[in-house]
Length: 154
Image 1 (cartoon, rainbow, N blue to C red):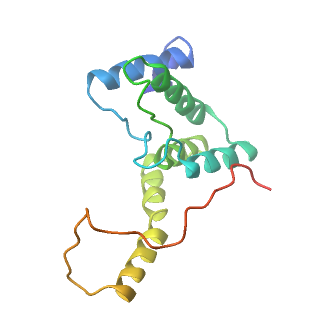
Image 2: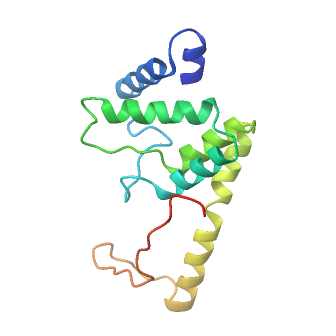
């Protein structure tokens, strides 16, 4: 929608600002592709966008994604609530810039979650009894410690 508005006339940032206002009016905040429940900046998204940029795929979809992120960050009613680009937004933008149709991007979003789901299922099968009740207030994570992900490729 942002790219269509930009092609109708105006700058990319103006189109992103208009789209942000429309999202606020429709109460679609955070919009798809933005925000993360744990991170103030999704490290996976940054790594993917950097890799795509290094490979020469920093096209209009990725540029519009960044323009929307700037618009969300500077909006007065949203300034205190970080809404960075998340991995879903990054995958969608990269897919757009390399010419993949939205249906293919949707499949890639699903495929990218399979390793984590498989690891979680294997851990559950190996460590826990089946059909148990989990109290969200009483669980404790005892897996590997948080690690710093690099933002640059070597």
